[in-house]
Length: 241
Ligand code: F6R
Image (cartoon, rainbow, N blue to C red; front, side):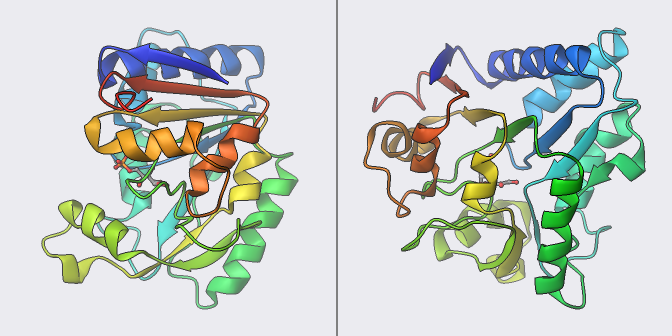
């Protein structure tokens, strides 16, 4: 495991983007596993910056997102589809057909999970997975539980996640209670993982994830077993290490 201690999320985003750009230059058809939320925003800004300078092309890049809420239309500003188009896809030359996000409006969410697993397999797996970490140690929407999860599945969001994500909605009651997420074992199959953590609010979860017992009570703790994990975090997030 490599830990890169950065000044702030801007510097962290630049470093994460550099890693992604290098990977895309080496393999233009890279499969990127992407996350939403506050943590990867500065990475997406730095990627866009690099694209505008001519440093990278997304022409052949393929993306698979970690998760999506169940029940939100793609056009809803709180959906992860909307987030990805606003923050990255509409700002670079990626082909829409090469971007993949679970369909939270699928009539049969379980079938959608199977379709998504097959899709990831058909792409040859994930080359680099970008992750944030929840205050409760979740990755994707894999909430603390009794077992680690395998493939894409439907989850009930933990009250603490609903609370944390309510900042993007006008009230807590509007936050969907279910989501589709890639599983922890599936995330672990990515060839390389970059975990982003910024701010004091992540300190406890990051400490447990990287130094605590490997236990599904902190889903991110499984990352300790990954052969190629880079953690990019600021002083505040690393303050309990
Ligand atoms: C988002 C995701 C979540 C977030 C986590 C941290 O696609 O999978 O696991 O990475 O909730 O969210 P932020 O970055 O908003 O603190």
